Length: 325
Image (cartoon, rainbow, N blue to C red; front, side, top):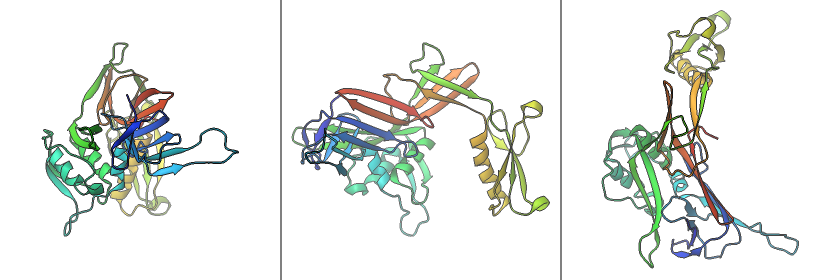
């Protein structure tokens, strides 16, 4: 890997040899930003690692100067290319309540990004092979949130990479949608990806939800989890297998609202199987699915973050699945 400094117009300046950290991913899991530690030339307006999405525009600078200053504490930072998409909002078209899209995923993406940052991102004309059918975006979500949610609903991933297309021309930042890959296998020493499996059976499976009212007149809903992890009003676990908890939501305006918030709370408290990715040099994209099977249990989770750390000229990349700290 090489890290290259760019002008604000994305023309190459030359190699960058300073330490750096890039954190890309789902905005719920990642800050989608980067930092370069060192005193960079005044002409440096951006940085990138060719062929990857590790890069972005410098939008913040910290520097110190004076005889009493020991060492170099200067740094520049900004949003990654992906992070820039979290700084733009999807608005409903005039006269419509929601933004609704249909068509090939790349055509949809091209339309969405046509005005973002003055058409900053390039979207290929080639079809993705993924058909979007009447997808409705959440009101006033960011472009990144909306695109990732659309991808998740269609077994797809948003791929971003910056490349030099020709000598003397600016670096091009490409965004495209591709089918998500499923990576993994059995939980054993032959797995292509080092997987860390957690089976938690200590959670709550019966939530007593109390809403409006006083004492005996309070609204009550009992919610239960079954062996498939689904939540409903039918009890599944009994006797020594039942685990109860109490949820107080006196602000519920209706039984439907009490059930909705109760389900969210029970999902947080319930037992679950999870997995993490151990240290490895395997490569994958944000949005790819890590899957593992142990006995009769199969667990899968999307890659939600990719982190690049550069220290002393050594590049180290790390992937994390959704929910992994």
